[in-house]
Image 1 (cartoon, rainbow, N blue to C red):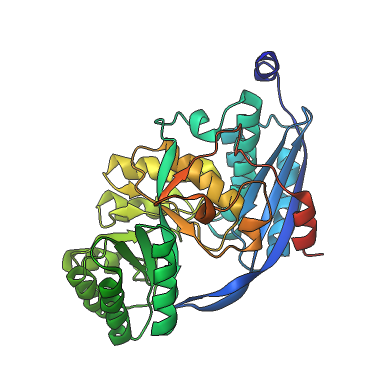
Image 2 (tube, rainbow, N blue to C red):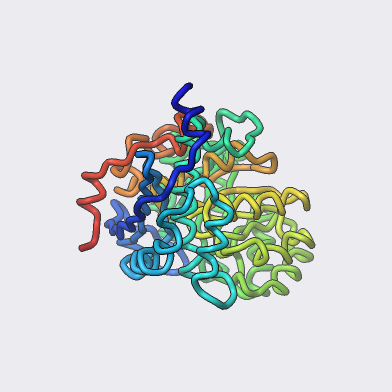
Length: 381
């Protein structure tokens, strides 16, 4: 306790920022309306301080991770060295000003990795998990759903569904794509196989135009699905508004948003029932929290997106979920990839969950320790 008080009363200066571009081959391909993913990447951000505290963060950098690493080390790092790591808001604004133009893209994703690392440092310095540091509402466990039944043939889809049910998940996401007829068949087929006690939702990954989405929405409503995720391209805000009028199933989106202003329209008019920012894309813990708080003001739920990201993204999302009153349910990606399985001393959520409930880490900061040997093995040279 004395050491915590000592750290609380002194500056914690940033001594170094290291961006580790990593690449992995997925144990099993992820198949969506966008195509088949065999291999994806990320950037692990390491922030070292003069106090000896090291924080880690994650950048959603599915492809070209070396470009993200260069951006961090050439544009963001000079603005961070020598600064107090606990001035997260000021540092976020400084990093944002490293490039002009509207916020988004690689810059905000890069900032996300640094921001998560700074919150990890803050929690370690205070001796508190991030969920408590955020002024959480005391949740020790959070609801999760299995992701996902891929857009595969019927027999494989059946096997994936049965696997998740067998692992105790009461909520499961299903990937759908064109054609509309095939998607509607899949929606009906999996509802019949799952029965009425399993909650199902779908993710279309922008597969449809408005008329197609309306037709799919009817099938979802008839089969009792609990949300329709990203049916349209994120830029098509007018289309989302029209779909909301003509679709009984709640709409979910937001993983493609970088900043709060990009979520503002569809949250403010309550077109969306669920907002799904990804902490490794949406400016880190700081901006994701602003998004979720804005959604709460409009009675819109918060449901963190994880996808093919790693254990840092998943763990940071769990802390946010535990802290925010409008949290509904968190994605629990079940790919068991090296990014989730090998990078830290905490097992992936899909292995730790019990009956759709996941314990929130309780150690200071993120509550994980990185396996730097695994980082070295996965790093792109």
